[in-house]
Image (cartoon, rainbow, N blue to C red; front, side, top):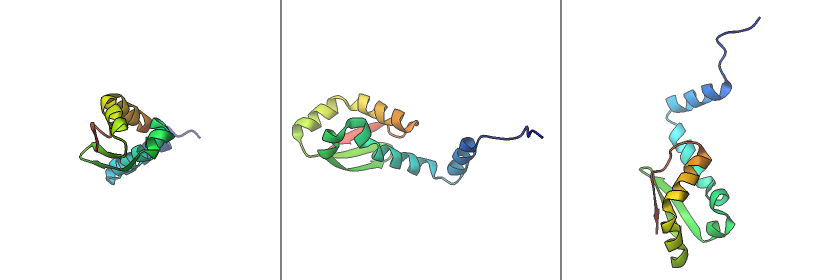
Length: 96
């Protein structure tokens, strides 16, 4: 017997996370964990203390030259990170 009211498990999990208010924190965690994968190990080695507050990603950068380079590519980095997560998690990045 075939069930007509069956739903995909992924849809149900997303609905559960959204109802419990867990979707945003999970996406923020995935974005921070994806920093090294998206930007590479060299950039990840020169950055740290990543955190998200009010849809803004704050990143501590140890090299002034790298900070300037990352600042110029801010929009591209933001789009790549959001695409990596599959959701609009951040709207801005602040490099300190």
